[in-house]
Image (cartoon, rainbow, N blue to C red; front, side, top):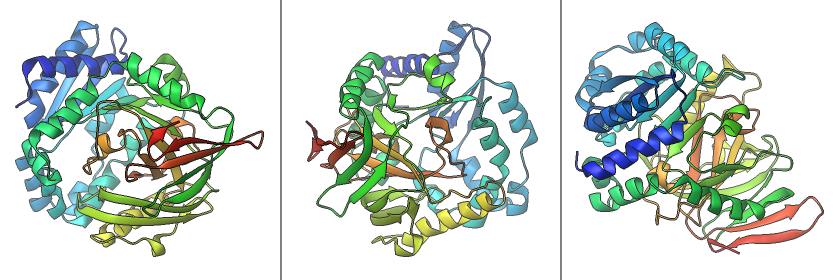
Length: 386
């Protein structure tokens, strides 16, 4: 653990503040062994508000041995005891599980898929239309992660810790300022000089300001989750309309953590065209993840929305300066736009899926809004809010 004690305490306090707990709430806190001091501090802060914590911890060594030695048939078994804990809890707080996330690139895909299948009942509980559990996922810096991103540990710690401790009041003020530009928006047009050029329909859709608090208003609107660092304005566009192209400089495979670079996506009538996806590295991993999730979705959800447009987001965290392929911070960089495919029912959409995959643009995007009165206004030019 390299983060200072003061920063650790500040992050724990912010995580519990975001969770907006009530007295007597049952809280499951999960994370990797490298985050144990943070998990314990979170638990103490949970106790202080009168809620009751339970900590579960894993390690890189344990997870690696699971995927090395345990057969897929066993990994596919539904963990009834974990399902029971989720049923009974009010809140799940998760912190980065792996110290060195690059080890996941070597996990067999069939075992990753089996594990994903076993967790579907938990996903159902987390996305129940009226009884969904509250959840929070927080990033955490490690030296191994910094090496894998090609940056210094100090840069990674600065982005995560400083980004996580921006006061919610500050984020709400910035978010409201940005949201005014989207008043009465019908269509949104986004483009840049890297290959992004698309239009999506957000007429009548919820305007979600990610200020780092799961408020009562969020809860009542069934938006019951949060990420830290926070700081984005996001929408669930109409899932079956919208066309265009999107360029994402770098991302990671949702299952294997393999790095995927120079990703070009094309979607028509809201649906990602998998046969037209290109990338300079590991494009097969991207396509495989979507197809594997689509197979799971076909057995469970109707209509199948694995590859439908799910989200349009604009980052605005003032303390996160640049992207380095860590999605949790990349999508909060001011001047970037991200889109996602898959599920979006938790924030105003209609799609259920086992996947929600965000792709972040290069910095410097342009955004134009066509309002319901037919007037068109540009709200962002080269990453700068106008």
